[in-house]
Length: 300
Image (cartoon, rainbow, N blue to C red; front, top):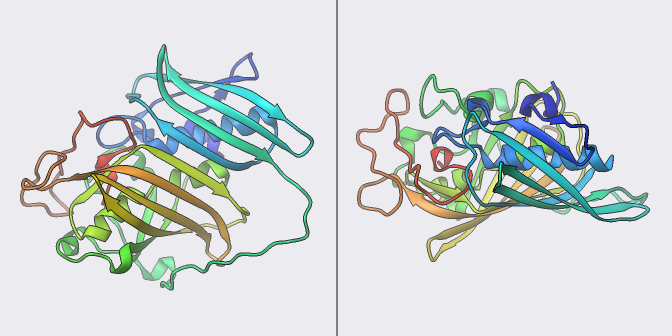
């Protein structure tokens, strides 16, 4: 299964228009389209229309798309040169704009292939504990992603234990996808909200306002290491970066986000309080009235 199949993305008779249904498997536990899936669908549409690989794409999340709706994606090519194309994609349900994505696509021959950052030192995926679903048995995007706690705390160990320097890490894979792609990395890069909870040592996270993916080099790999750095939290917003590495240490892409910070504790602002949380049995309520973004439901 490739990214288009995973997302249910299909072309239309118009080579600049694509569409996909919003299903529970593409949605958050809060019942709306996961932001990374929206960006991933836009990237697949942009690559399909331009027939060029992604260099970077940035999404601004504007509204919700709920299961049962269909998102149309309209691609506009602003400038197309010999080696690169500048384009944008607008995802909308009827006349409601859900997300806008600006992007550059293309490739150039250049005999330089260097990486100047290194991944966090962690054990391989098969030696790391799985991260269980927060809502066992729920069908959502999280039920389609396999996560391992590479350098992160489990639900029961999180409270009061903030991650050193705001850095955490997960191993991730999408079992339904055989090969990594820019669209797949867009889905997996949507984990700054997770890092916020880890950085604070709290049941916290947020709704994403944006997501930017920058592709360096995609190589075959089963697992992707999400090396998450929360840069800062102030004025009610959090900001951070995710570096996405192949199992062999190749830096494939970086993703960055700004989020509305939200808490699940009664004494803090944000989503409704949770009581007596245990990872195996308790459902944490989510704020379904939050401003647009990709999901307080998967924010720790």
